[in-house]
Image 1 (spheres, rainbow, N blue to C red):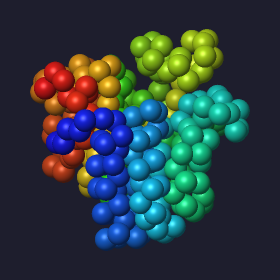
Image 2 (cartoon, rainbow, N blue to C red):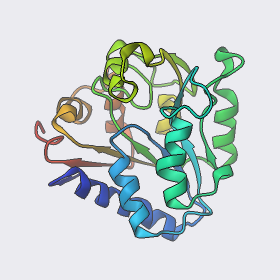
Image 3 (cartoon, rainbow, N blue to C red):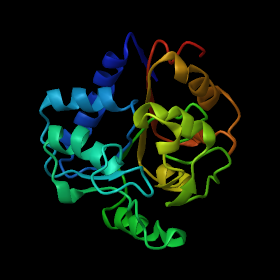
Length: 235
């Protein structure tokens, strides 16, 4: 774990870990988080001018039901904040289908694509205030795989800041499962701000329980946590 004075400095430290991986393995496979937590990482990585053109990447999740090109769809967020500034190849960056024909079987093809790519070398993670990873809300099985889920009320309230009103926030999403996330060879969790301090404390020092999904990180054999001082305040 490393603790830094600001979100920007935490982003620089986290970006260096991603850069080191890509320098050593230009065809690395990354898992991409969205939301506000990883943005300083992506911004810092863009400044490093690392050649990302051969990297394959898989986003953690996507809302269900947003129209193509919606500004808050994670496909759009990934394109705007990751693909374009990092010079990645669009066809090598995958996002779950936000309009699946059959929600019950929404994750099978995504799981197969991750497996075909050789698995994820480094999974970038944020953390929800309720402990979710991706959109694996409290109670999600540690054995879960990519699937359609219902968003918790707290998650929707937290995400209102992106959509303007609670009513505009989707109620469903497709997310990589906790077992899918855990399969990554390395986890890189980044958090900043006092609003994440309680979640970080529970994730790193509380009991490992499905009622707080991020606690699973305690069991991973190779995980790094990068925080600013506010997020680390309760440790």
